[in-house]
Every structure is written in C-alpha cells, then in structure tokens.
Length: 327
Ligand code: ACO
Image (cartoon, rainbow, N blue to C red):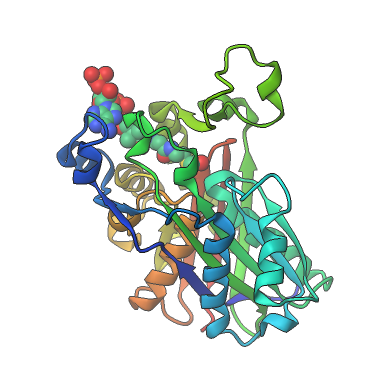
C-alpha cells in the first residue's frame, strides 16, 4: 500500500465560552463536581445561526492555509458528523461548494465521537488504492444542538467545534496502521431521542420535544477504557511497534478520568497523553483532530515521532491509528 499521511491540519472553535459557573445557573451542579469528575472547565458554544457546516468550512479553510494541496485540487471530502445541518444535503457537499473544490466527491460519515478516525481510515483507503490523490477529512459537530439543557448528566459534558486534516501521499512515515471495531450490542447506551425514522412509530417518545442525547454514563465509561486502551495496543502491533515506541497519544477527550484509566490500562504514562478537555469539553468527532493540531503546535509532536490516536463513541464505535508524523 502506498504511504498516506496528514499534510495539513486546521480547526475552528466558536468564540463563545460556557463556563462551569454558567452551568451552575442552569442545572444543579458545581464547578467542583464538573472539574473533579470530568476535568472540564469550559466549553465553546456555536453562535445562534452558526451551523455544523459553518464550523466545518472554517476548519477546512484553516487547514487549507498551510496545505500543499489547494482547494481546487481536492478529490474527496469526508465529513464526520452526527449533527448535520439537516438530514440532507450532506455537510460534505456544503463544504465542497463553500471552499471551491469542484473536483471532489463528498459525503458524510456517521460514527459519533469516533467519526474522525473512521473518516480518516476511509480516506486513507481511497488514496492508497489510487482512486483519489488526496482527501479533505473534517470532523464537525454542533453537539450542543442535541443537548437537553435540563439534564445535568449530559449538558455539562459537551461543546461545539470542528477540526480538519488534509491527507495525501507522503514519502516517509504517514499513517502506519488503523484499527476499527464496532459493537452494536452497546447501541442503547447512548441514543438521540426522539429522532430519525423511528419517531412517528415510537409511542414512548415526546415527538414535540427537540431531539436530545440520552446516555448511560457509567456503562459508557466501562466500555471506553478497555476499548481505547486495547485499540492502541492492536494498532501499535499492526504497525510493528509496541506502546513504548509511542511518543504521544492523542485520545478522544470525553473525560479526564477515562484518559487516566486508558493510560494505566495501556501501560503508557499519562504524561505522554495530550489533553485539552479543560478548554473544550467533549466536542464529539472533532475532539481528537482538534487535540492533534494543538499537540503539534505545542511541540508535543515532532517530525518522525510515532503517535497514537484513539477514540470511542456511541454505536459503540472504537478506533485507533498509529501515525509517523511527517511534517
Ligand atoms: N453535577 C452534579 N452532580 C451530578 C452531575 C452534575 N453535572 N451529573 C451527575 N451527578 C450526580 C449523579 O446524579 C449522582 O448522584 P447520586 O449519587 O445522588 O445518584 C452522582 O453525581 C454520581 O453520578 P455518576 O453517574 O456515578 O458519576 P460518574 O462519576 O460516573 O461521572 C460521567 C458521570 C461524567 C457522565 C461519567 O460517567 C462519564 O464521563 N461517562 C462517559 C460518558 C461519555 O463519555 N459519553 C460520551 C461517549 S462518546 C460519544 O459518542 C459522544
């Protein structure tokens, strides 16, 4: 397979901050509870009328600024999202028009918080087989549009944002391995209700209420830890490496305690994990790519480093990739 790497990264976070203190006036919670149980201090909230496609376009433009591949030469666009502006058209098609990428085919990928790695792995295959020369991979969610602001179990955890990566052939390094695994038996653990085609038939649902997230946080926690830890080990083995070779792990940012447990279980010091959950909360699929961009800018990842990306999300969907950083 030809080598495929990330050649540019971008991100967009809305400017409006929602702090833990702000949430104290919405639900019965406290800054102390949120920080000690999750590590989150604040999150970003999209402006009124700012939709997922706006977040995605802004992240794509940021990535294109430093990209050797120009918008007019992009051949495929994948957008990982669970909060599209509407069921169709896809966010990817809206991005294609907005950035001026007429050669690209474009579609969305639904894999909740794991969406970025599911989309990146898809893009890698298209490039490696020669079907396209490059791809723009975006993860974007206006996740707070599906939050019940009266439910303290969920509303303190999530924020909005987008990240983007441009993938192209590289001479050295690049994506060394991927591992994707899904477990539909865990589907009931995190569901958006009412919503989708079930709504008219499901008598238990209050169809007048806007769609909102329900989740079993404790059970998700129990699945997330072994899922992400084992995914790193399997992806490392597929790359012919051990976890000792990994310079930095960039995990999905759902909960600081989940990350600490993943580190312990994977046998990798927590100091080697990049964590920015305090600033953004869980921004769904965008978490891992936003964190990756910040890790590179902070000098935590350097050219030639072998890094692991590991994610977990509703579905259940889990994934990891090993990347040798190439710029
Ligand atoms: N403020 C104050 N108290 C709260 C809050 C809150 N925001 N939320 C829950 N509590 C209370 C509970 O009601 C409970 O009270 P009780 O003991 O009187 O019943 C107590 O705090 C403890 O609740 P737990 O659920 O046991 O708290 P836990 O330590 O498990 O933390 C949390 C909850 C943060 C949700 C954790 O389980 C978690 O992070 N789970 C993973 C969730 C996740 O990552 N979801 C996203 C999946 S990825 C995707 O696809 C989007």
